[in-house]
Amino acid sequence: MNYFLQKKRQNFIDVTPLFLGLLKKGAFFISRTEKTRHSNTDGYLKGLKKNSFVFDLRQVIDDFQRVLRVLYYTHSAHLILGSKKKFKFTAAKKILFIGAPNTVQELFIELCKSKNHFFISEEDWVKGLLTNNVNTCDYKRDFLKNLKSKSVKEKQFFYQKFGGILKLQMLPDLIVIFNHSQSERPLIESKKMNIPIIAILPLYSNPFEIDYPIFANFKSSLSSAFFYKSIKKALKVSVWV
Image (cartoon, rainbow, N blue to C red; front, top):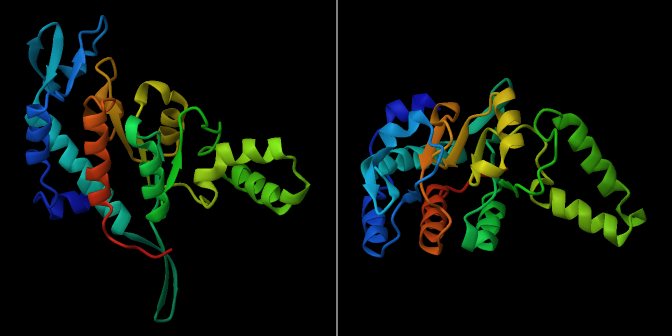
């Protein structure tokens, strides 16, 4: 991943005008003053305004454009699984999104499906999804094989938990966490399996624990729409599976 970031530094997705537009509309990327603020967040802040921390806009823009590059290259890259003579067997790299921008969740889930990536909410996280991936895949396969014998309640529970990750057979190549404060288990499992992590963080979190951190307010309708549209643009390349 770092290879791509070093080889192509230009901002192929320039989000600066979008950020400025959000600021003009009053959608400031700020966080209310919190009693506990991690000491490693100093470089991400510009100062205080009306008892609120104001994020350094330039830093947020740089971080977010880096995240979009990571999403773009992961989405458009393929893994070489093996080769025989002149033929290569490859598979598209996969992204697992945990949670979604608040006001555009349905649109975001449809985006994940259309781009052949995966989605699961923080509340529906399955313990051991990453660290015990083989057993999770076996459970999904056995359940679907015996689907006719399952009750309506069992089916509802299954599709609520696994609907967005039914085709996830291998570990994802990238994890994206929207609500970091409610995703402790996914974070622990991702780090244990050495999967790169993108996360939107509150001020009490340590950015050094995340590969690609973003300090921003993603809960308002304006910022949710902004994140959705930006990620959609980063995933514009069509890939086969």
